[in-house]
Image (cartoon, rainbow, N blue to C red; front, side, top):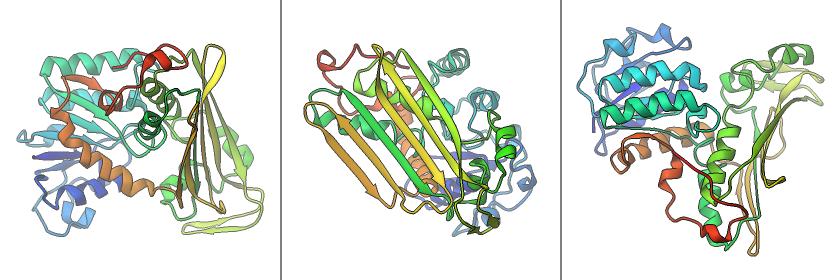
Length: 341
């Protein structure tokens, strides 16, 4: 399978390393797209991404500069729907199916229905699939909890917590969570694109679709977490009282009660990292990943592992909800099942 890579930030480079190792995959080309990585255009992909072997690829400056010989494309450029729609449409014009890391594309039918419809129409016209996934959203806080829920006869409530020490993470991740800012600086950034984790609402709707719930609404909160003592990172020092990270929560309501609660806490110096899933119902279940799941490596892996699925789904904009291994008995669900892509 010949797979073009679009976007060469840290995640895009990790995907390139996996694609270049063979196993039925081939990397014929790569391009930058978006504001984050235009400086990489014209560079050797092997040098940029640290590939084990040099495929002789020079990084293209845009999607338009790529050769047309490919079977699929990976798009790892942005988190917001508004930013990636033109890129997805440009790839679909080539007739390429697409796997994307875009958080808001993971389940956009409720949050961005018009943009989702544009992509769906274009993909169906070309007879190919567009699918977004990742470790979060796309798996840990939505797809995997819905799979775990297959072990119980009824789901009353789902709680998912992702708690991380952001100290060892990439500098770009720490910037996203506001590490090192004052509270006033954080307040000025709050609400802007790129502040905090994108995709909690998408996870709530995707999870609801998987456990047979229809959400009436979701409510999100984002608050800064300050450092209690000095914290050293690879790119500086966070003083006591400065922002060390974020606490984000998303609640999904059905029939007037909270049935989904998602917590994302990423803080420099967090004493314990873990991922926790709790299913409440007649047979309550709890799953916990001690130490947490490594976000960057897991995202690259699930993107590459999702590529063969593009030919197992009908054309159009699809979500991980189209891949549930079994369906819950909706007669036993807490409320009628939701829709989906």
